[in-house]
Length: 442
Image 1: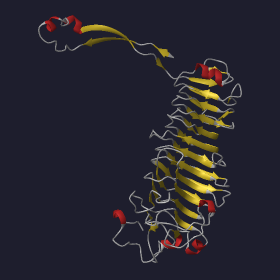
Image 2: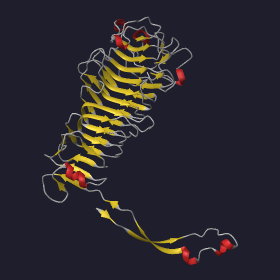
Image 3: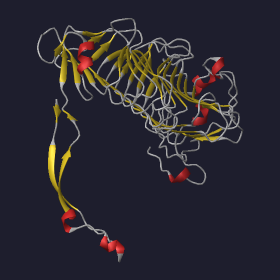
Image 4: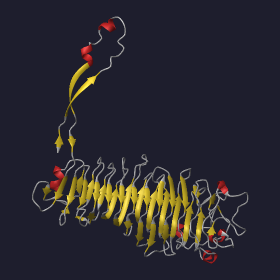
């Protein structure tokens, strides 16, 4: 509803310094200082709700298209029980207005039978309580931003590559296929992916959640049940800075040696750098795959990872670190320069299993002098009086291990490189005291 408001206002002007001589003669009269103005305020819109419903009457429409045609930015379109959002042709339903589109909150999710596409330049669309059943689900065009997808079921969510992508919220949903979220490398306001349940096969480049150039993104408190299969991954993050990966629970129902819980990659194919805080996640590949894979493909100061309080048990390899030939970046698994408190759980990794290629941490393709700190983590006997030598369950350039229990294409037959710095059999206190002033919580 449009409201036209008129305001009568008395405006008092303060006289400037008009100077001397002729300038003073041109000064305004006192009457000019007080005058009455009639000003018209802008047109304002009061949000309204349009109902897609079989009920006739004001505000009720027989189809989504009819409701959309009359909706103004900020309005709500509510899909009543039994009604559906569907295209009138083979093309997606397109959205280019800031609207909330929702199923009736008092009932189950409303059916979306066609693909839905949010067009370039559109900001602030909200989808809630919907069931997207079409093949491609929801498509966010390049340059659309701040879309929210809440408490819905989706086959797929795809954020296309392009400038201006940022600030989308994907929360409380069930995603049966995948989410592919491409950010803008020049923007630091990434997407927020929180509290979702991923149940799909991960058909988007074999990842359930795939994020590229998504700086300052949050991936938090999601549950992943991944079918498994060749190179299936739950989370794959590429060239994204200041990412938070926390509180995610990852499980593979049919894993193999190529299954990866979380893959963070610095790729040569995209701009930007990679950095993340990875904490309080739990990953299980049924003892066959890799919990966390850190892959630095490009030389330079472009990768830093702060890893703490994660559970990497029930994997063939807990943390696999692949360098660029010289370095794997700044990796802190505990007691390092990034402030990791350690606390990562490797208690199920044993010296006997290491002989068969099961390693808590495996370091590859770095210089011999490159180091990864891994203090204060949970090892097999670290809660007993007999201190555990963590080097017996890790692989670097000093231990002589060769075989990994993971596929050869992941470096399974490579000898370890570099040095993993951590507790030894002689006790927890390193020569010269605790690194970077840290004191462990034991």
